[in-house]
Length: 436
Ligand SMILES: [Zn+2]
Ligand SMILES: [Zn+2]
Image (tube, rainbow, N blue to C red; front, side, top):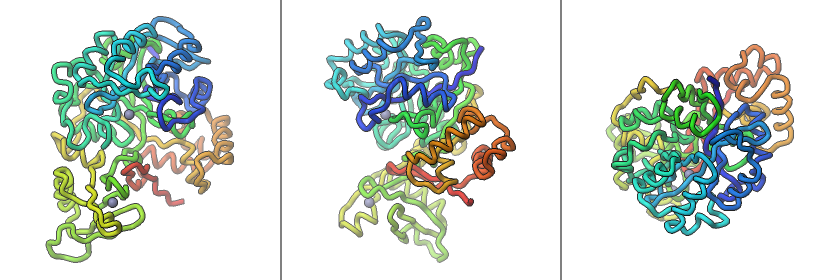
């Protein structure tokens, strides 16, 4: 049996807001640097991208495709009638074409130039039935994000509510960047599904591609083997989920739906039972102080859930009543069935990683995300030490120290979970707080 590093949810340049340079060459190039073995193709239902993939991917055997040494699984994301994003894997190109034909009457954009992530006006249970009848696999994408996800505010609280009779056909759930296993395993309804941690990359940059991935134990990199792994059969399984600390994701913390400030709680010096009427407003945050921040936060979340909390910043600055929205962490608090995670026996460990490019940027104090200095240093480091995943996860810290002491120290701190994070929210990524 083999271990494969897999990032199974990406996009092509046919989805809105993606890089023009996303193609098989750039994807393969970055994958080799990262240490990724299997990639989702992204957007396989989009006609132009489908043609391009059919022309360029080599079929190694049934359901196993490759390009310049990198393996691919035919993959797409769909939006259903409930505006929930679903991740889909296909066994082969002929199935992709059949599904495309079947879904076309329910979709305005599935054959369109920008149909990378087509909207399909079918209820989730029906969509699951159709997809699985064709022998493909489907499960919720970035399940907890506040927009277009199964567990978003005022939407579902369990898999059963959403998929009804079809729930047994859903074998996996994608955590999304702002969640991890500890958060998701507070929901009892998820104990039987496998968790995927994927990048949802919109660019070929090493900051984006593989920023989350799964280590999967399988015989070979094919669709059939992936099915066995997600169903945890014949010793196939996900061995490890690797991803950002949820606080680094852009939807972890609650936020104002307009000004996008994140709402944080702190302790007040004063006494008295003023719950959360004292706050300070900065560029990015609304900080609410109270004598008992834990209780105050609980009650606040409860009221946000009911749509009762108006953003104090928007009220004060533009005199508008805009509602505060729950982030991933607070939404999980609301719908969780236990306060602490209860991991089923099959659940693999989840480990934190931060893209090496971002660690280098932090050490060199360079803000730009495409700085040539940073990219050169990144390549130099890979040449000396191995793939990015080797450096982030496996190589002895002492070895990394010989190359760069500061970077080694940060990687060590991330590995041992000894880093402070400023939580992201409302579309802004979180940050690592470094003392260098
Ligand atoms: Zn999505
Ligand atoms: Zn606001």
